[in-house]
Length: 284
Image (cartoon, rainbow, N blue to C red; front, side, top):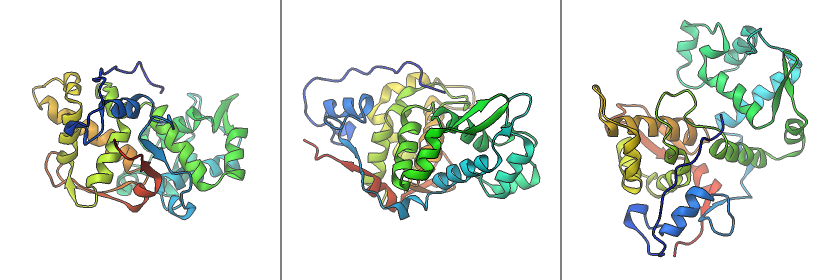
């Protein structure tokens, strides 16, 4: 679930702005990719004063809180022989609408095990990865670290912790069957910048994937053509899934109007929260 070795991209050493980088200099892009949290050099700034009311409107944030509270009420929660969450517990999560995607699919096909819901499985492994839950003697329970965040930290502090852990520690390619393509995750800050720059107007998914490919064309080397689709089409599907559906959408940055993935009918719109969470240093 942690990163494999990061690809290395060589940048020019001079500091002129590049159109392909939407005005970032090569040095700025280097820090944005490899040292995103470097407060001195990274152009991205995480706003430390976010209104908690905005955070509590984010479904993913609320799902994490609900999951942790239900574990707390049942801990130590006995796991299956394979170490998975028990079926009854998973059904409780579904009944609480801790779902992602079409709820009707889970009504027509009831969950029989944890893996029947990628989202529930993801929340389970993610909360373990960030040290909020732990397995012990065939059970799962909250850690002291988790209790501290739930009892003493503000919503914005918890949100920032989840955001940082998800963007830098969790492997976005986990179980999606696409190539590793580290640059898709490594450039999460650039994707946010694109949304902030263009997201006030409805744009098709292809608009953003074309912008990303313009900045990082070498990523296509990891997406060879197949009998059924081109490498660019496979990249776009991967980019949409990892960045837009499972990152920007989860953290409340965008609204997605469903449509044909490979056309401009897949419409993306920026949400208000985006500009409250992420700030930028003035570009040189």
